[in-house]
Amino acid sequence: METLLEKTTAVSAPVSLTAGAVEQLNLIRQEQNIPDDHCLRVGVKGGGCSGFSYVLGFDEPAENDEIFEINGIRVVMNKAHAIYLLGMEVDFVSGLQNRGFTFNNPNAASTCGCGTSFSA
Image 1: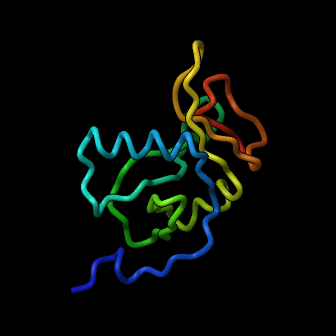
Image 2: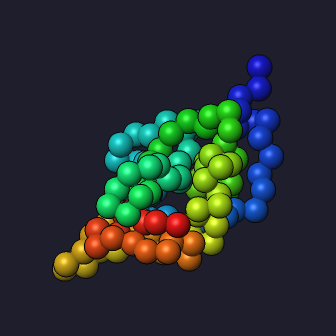
């Protein structure tokens, strides 16, 4: 029986991952023993200070997902989320005042101070 990963055709990725994000995601995958059948889920959900918040974490592909290969990382995204995330760059920052993933989203009309929520 084919798995969802095997029968899904890769299409052009709507988001990008910086080298820093890829390095950190690979480290997280290794440290937390994330199974090989899990992909990085990038998406949005309602809520947060500005209306939407970003989803970023390892998960199994679901029925309405598209699968992308971005810098060696399999990424899944619900097809409906692409309109909010098209052209977005995910980065990882490690500085004195800030450490974590950042989302540079050209579709965001406004963002909040925490950087993890936006309005479209």
